Image (tube, rainbow, N blue to C red; front, side, top):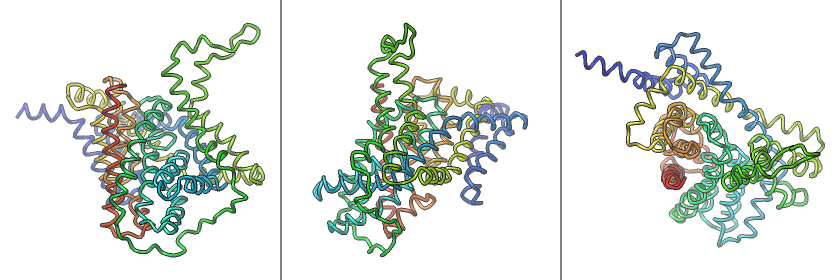
Length: 463
């Protein structure tokens, strides 16, 4: 009996975490609590249950919210602004129609994949989806190709950018939690994204070529089409959309290839060093600077240059930030959850538990995120909660924190079903039954998730 009690005491932190997650599921799924409120309540409850004084728990929550949001608020804010400029200027419309014209019907998959990737990097998933869905329908009607055969590659591309690549909320927030280099995360994410999109997009899409669906509702899309003479050029549209990616990827490659030797190359004025090449690479690759530069350039190329006044552009930017308010709160609450686990000593317990285990931290992160995704529905909440649980392993193992970000992001995309808003968005716009949505959307998301973790494990061999 004494031995059983000792074993229970030994595993009490794990039991407490599991009970806390169970309460989180009940609050969100059964009682329909907002995810932000639910995460804060659970963070308070877990902290107290683990023996922390209430005042210390509150301080941990404050520290976690502040430490996680920090500069993340700037990245997501600038990201929302850039997405709005790309959408409202017609740049996304021009990218799509131009790529489709250039690739032709035979290579339509590659056109929609590139469109989904270019538009998906600076835009939140739901915004990119709603923007591009009318174009998918237009392509299907003009080419007489099945709607899912055309749509799946583009949606797969949007989904991968959402789950793998900064500056999207989940991968960016998890990068902060794990202390990962965001530029390297982006670079590894792009390497992983290419095969993932191809497998989940064109290859899986071919299996849906004979998939019969109901006719889509007429007048479903209120989005107005901008006249071609008012659109920014294709070159300007693509360049502006990809500025953050280009800067961060260049920075990551520079760090890997040049290293400390870049410090020997410097700009000097009157014998005083102003900046060296290594620092310049770091500055330009910093996500805040990269996205800020993109926004400043887009204000002119996609705003003023298209005939808008500065006031119209600024009003549009102010409006765009409103959509990320709740996302920021949820991310902050995820940071609070993580901090309570760290300050309560549970992080050390998880580390001790896993150090002696043969299970790869990458697989562990994927499994936890996948389980939470299946239970909660929200990919962002699943990723952030998993991040708080897995974070202690970063310093205790030799796993790459950047790959850990990607593994967590991949897990958070798996098996989307009826508790996920993305599931219903896809179902309603494509006018599918629940069974058809499970066969198409859910399967595609799961392929993205599985290929993602397999890719992470392969990259781990070389990194």
